[in-house]
Image (tube, rainbow, N blue to C red; front, side, top):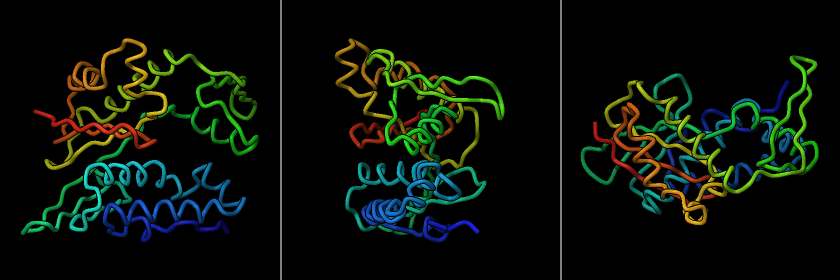
Length: 236
C-alpha cells in the first residue's frame, strides 16, 4: 500500500494567497524530509504532481497578482472540469467567482528523465540534451554533463511557451477564465533577452501568442523562479 503524501481535500482547501504559499512551502518540506518522500515528490507520484504543475504556479500568481490580501481565496480543483482553480473574491458584494486554467511550458517526457537522474545521481544538467537509445524496455537514457548555449536555451524556452499556448487554443472555457502559462524564468528573462538583442517578452507575446484563438479573459506568464510575471488582457 503506497503512502499518501497529500490528499485531495488538502489541495482543494480554500486559502488566501499568502496561506496557499505558506502551505505549499511547508508541505513540500514535510514530504521531502524523508528519502521515500523525496523520491515520490521528484517522480511526481499520484497527487504529488499537482503541487509543481498546478498549485505552485497558482501560488506564485497569487503572490504577484493579489499580494497579502485577505479578501480573496484561491482553490485548486482536481478533476475533469475545464479549469484548474477557482478565485473567490469576497471583497465586494455579491461574492464573485472566476476561474484559472494552468499549463506548463515543459519538455514533456524529457522532464521526467531529468528528475529521475537528479534523484539517482544528486545532480543533473538542466539544459543538457536528453539522449535516448533503443525503445520500450530496452530504452536507455543518458544526460551528458554539458549545457546548451544561453541563446539556444532562450529559444527553446520561447518555443515551449508557444507550444503551451497552442495546446489551449480553440478550446472553450467559462467566460471569466484566465490562462496561466508557467515557464522557466532562470532560462528566459528580460535580462537575457536584452543581452541577446531579442525582442522583449511583451513583443514576443504580442507577435507569437496573441494570434492564437485563446478563449480566455486574460493571459499570464508566470516564472517558476518568481522573477517574471506578465499580465495581458485578451481581446476577442
